[in-house]
Image (cartoon, rainbow, N blue to C red):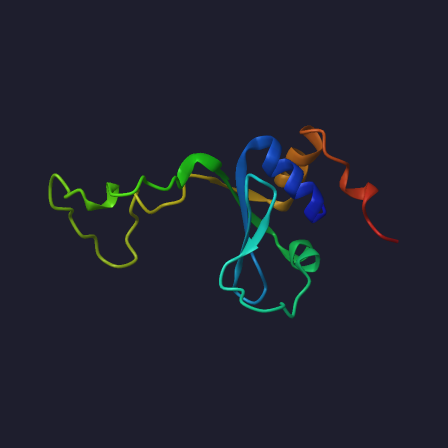
Length: 124
């Protein structure tokens, strides 16, 4: 599986695909097919294609989750005070709405979505 295959899948599925880099950062391939690494401020010292090859777990999220609110919408007061949960506790509001996939599951999705078979891109 190559980055181009992941980009095509994210566009076709209108979903975001997240995976962890070896240096602890996270890459997000957006529903527009753009790979973004949060916190990256300079030329990276890693190759994203190699990082993808090393990744084993992926998170597939629907693209509609993070809509920006219209100007002034954030000024509304909450109707009821929110209950605070202890640190580290599961919270449905902050939990990702996507599903976790292994490399094999994601590869199968790419092949079934009409993407190229992973072996056709492999270098010898």
